[in-house]
Length: 341
Image 1 (cartoon, rainbow, N blue to C red):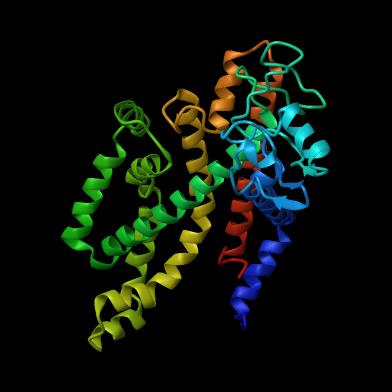
Image 2 (image 1 turned 30 degrees about the horizontal axis):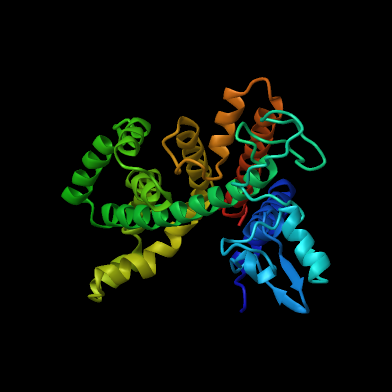
């Protein structure tokens, strides 16, 4: 695919912002690693060889009887008895993930009461329920980023459509939408989210739908301004004179120019989505209890001041993630700056 000179210049501008450029690569590396969280932190082995047969506990739950045990229940591979059956009686071996705990695995053999401090077994310590903090950070990072990605994309689609309709048609349609947005944006969003979350047990998709009701407004004014400017350009007037469909004019001729402002604004919408989810989880109105969550880790740090590793871990992870996203947003803004293209 041949890149236009303008896009080449934008790419050069993005690369020229070294802080944003390297922040993007660091963030992508962290996100890619979190996508394979099950291979990094899991209480089930990656592979098991038993009597010359290979088993995949990460993908399938095998009953204990498969490995010579007595029970039909799922195998507890951390049980020394099961390990002895596999390695000695079955002449086999076990390959574990680097961290032998999943986000919900409870360590019953802690040397000290939970929350226990960092150790060779639990690199970042455990929380007050004896769950490995490192494992919960990896899984929590993944779910936070996926949530923010989906919410940002959906918010951008709704915001672009609403802003396009307002800016293109203007008049009474623009006036009605502006009054509606003024009223809607004046609502106490966080309080409404808390009230709704207290009525219905929240989950990933339910929270996504509720937050989408409000998150799209942040982009409307930017797109509306671009369409108000673009609808009076000569090529748009010519397209109208030729009788082209309004939808075709809006989304084929004006929207590409409006997307510059949209793309510049998207990293900051992404950042806001992460902060909102973290705040809801911290207050206990976010993801279901027990879910790996960065906000829940912040709450753990607040509730366990005698375990400083919880608060420090939460602060470092959140501040690093948000800082990387801000740097990326600044680089995107520089890339699309009309004074530099």
